[in-house]
Image 1 (tube, rainbow, N blue to C red):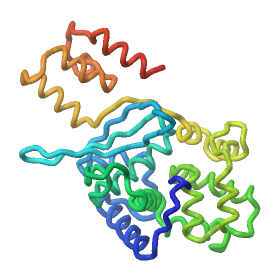
Image 2 (image 1 turned 180 degrees about the horizontal axis):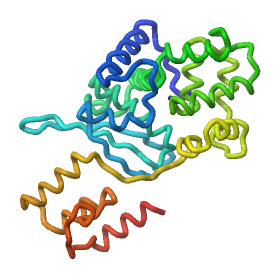
Image 3 (image 1 turned 135 degrees about the vertical axis):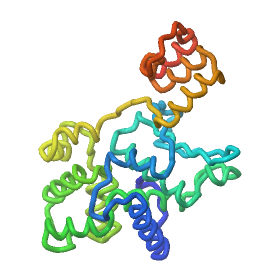
Length: 290
């Protein structure tokens, strides 16, 4: 999604990504013209991917949106997507879609541990896949044609373009910059339009774009621009923790500590326990909340 990645994908790479997006949507049972949006979390279960949500803080000026981890057991391969919920909510959705590319293609550092950094071409492909998965080309083209009677947005005023983008964001739940990228890479806007639109501060509450977004749908505008900072984990993981406790593989203290990592307590699942989080773990959680 970042403009800072200078890689330009060739026609074959783009064709392969569009084909993979079509296959992935078919696998999910999602029609090409149907938004995925918030439902992307539910779709992960169909891929048997476990989602772990946690609000990680920025470190040394860097920010991680998500990552993928996997390991093999005797009978299975278990895959996790770690999602940083200190990101804005629309960025969280995009990050999950980005990681689905790595999972589907078995690409990236998680599948090539000998590399120190993510390959810029692979990251560009993952971003393009995420954008295409969340907003397919045909759906975008239909929206442009219906709004302007043409696939050419190059002569329309900026304010009209922003109103269109705001409607698209409320319908499809991509980050603002990702929609600008989609319009440019599909040839609907010029390079000068792209540069001008991309630099708009879409998060500024008092800015023009945010006001337009609120007028399209105030509730969705609020959600997409919220740093949710939620802590959670796929239900399958919670059930495994509970089963391990019930089978005696972990004791009371470890059970409480493990659930607390995901902001849950034994009583949430019908257990009455006196074990409490120790002071060190309390301090850890309190520091993460600051």
